[in-house]
Amino acid sequence: MKILFASQAIDGHFNPMTGVAVRLRERGHDVGWYTGPVFADKLRKFEIRHFPFRRAIEHRGDNLNELYPERARFKGPRAIGFDGEKIFASNISNFFEDIRELHRDFPFDVVVVDSSMFIQRLVSRLMRTPVVTFVAIPNMESDPLVPPLFFGFKPPRNLAGKAVQAAAGLLSDKVILRPASQSYRRQHAAYGQSVPRRGRLTDEPYRCAEAVIQTGPESLDFPRRNVNPKVHYVGALLPHRTPEPADPGVDGTRAAEAAPEADGQWPRTYPATLVVTQGTVDNIDQNKLIVPALEAVKDMDALVIVATGGRGTEELKARYPQPNVIVRDYVDFAKVFEFTDVFISNGGFGGVQLSLSKGVPLVVSGINEGKSDVNARVEYAGVGISLRTEAPRSGDIARAVADVLGNPAWKKRAAQMREQFDLADPAEAAAAVVESTGPAAGPQPIAGHNPGP
Image (cartoon, rainbow, N blue to C red; front, side):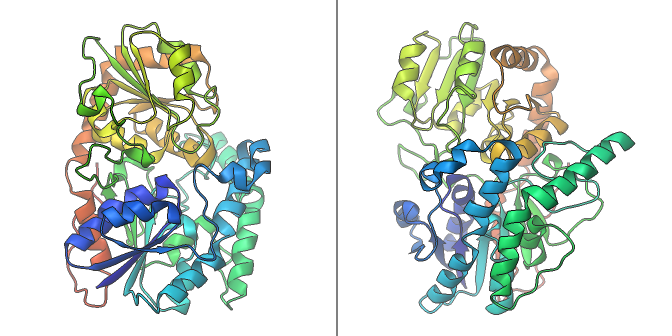
C-alpha cells in the first residue's frame, strides 16, 4: 500500500508522526512524506521519500516571528486567533494543490494528515482518497462536556461554571476562530465545497476522516458525552529514535553532542532531579519560564537540568554558575526522565506525554499555542500543577515544585499514568489504524483502540 504522510514543518507536529511512518515502512508499505524542506535530512535517514512544499509557506518553530513580525505584539486570544489564520488556515489551498500534484508521481492509497493542516475535506471529497487524521495535541473535537478551547478550563462543577464556559465558547467561535473559519470557508467555496454551519472549525479534521489517531491515553482527556468511534487513543507517540549519538528527543530536541551527559553520565549525588524547558517554539524570551524557574530552584539541594532548545545557552551558563545547574542546548529527555523527579515545562503535549510515560509529575506553565488546554488536562488528571499563566513568578514555581516533591501522591498518580502508557505499543496501534483504512483492509481489530484508565 502507498501511504502519504502530510504534516506542518513544525517539530511538535512532525516528530510524533515519525514512529508510525517508520513502522509502516518496516511492515512493507511504500511511505512518502509531504512536509517542509527542513525535514529532508531526517526523512532521508528514515528511508522515507520526501515531497517538499512547493506552493505552501514553510512555517517552522524558528521562523514564525520572522515571517510575521507583527505576531510578537499579540498576546492571549489575539495571538491564538492570529496563528489560527496565518499559520494554519492560510496554507490550506496550497497544501491541497501540492498534494494533488504529487499524486501523479506517488499515487498514494491513504493519506495520514496532521490535524492542523485542515485539508481533510478537500482530499477526501475531491480526490476520493481515504484520510486518517493525526492529532498531536489533545482531542479538540467539541463535546457538551468538554470546555471550549484556548482558555485552559477544566470541566465545570456547577451552573455558574457552565455559564462562564458557554460565554467563552461563543468568544472562541465568534472572535478567536472567526478569521481562520472565514478563510477556511472561502478556500473550500473556491472548490465548490460547502462546510456545515454547525460545529467548530476544529471539528473538521474529525468529520472528514476515515479514522483519527489521537496521541495520548484516553485518561489524559476530559470525559465526553459523545464517543466518536473514529477516534483511536493510541498512547504516547514519541519521535522515532535512531541508533545515533544525537537521537531526536521530544519536540525536536536532541542529545548534546560531545557532552559527558550524552552517554547518560549525569551527576547522581543530589536527592532530587529537576528538568526545565521552554520548548522549541516559544523559547525566545527565556524570562517567561526558564529564568524564573532557575531563580526558584537554583539554591535547592537538587540537580537542575535545563534544555534551552538552542537559544541563549551560553548566557544562561554564565548567569547561573551554580554546580547543581547544568544548561544545555538539548538533552535526551527519554534518558533523563528515567531519574527525574519533577518536569518544569511550558506544556508542550509531546513533552508532557514523554514525562508521564516515565512516571514523572509536572509543574506546567503556558497559555499560547494551545498549551493552556494541555496544562488543564495535566491538572485534571492529577499528575501535575498548572500555574495558569504565560509568565509565572519564581515564588509560585518554588511552591509548586516543593508541593510535588513533598507530596508522594503526585508521583503515585504519575506512576499510574506510566502503567497505562506501558500497556500498548503506540506505533503498532497507530499503524493498524492506518492499515484498516486502506483498499485491502478487512474487518481486523485495531490494537490499542480506546484503552481506558
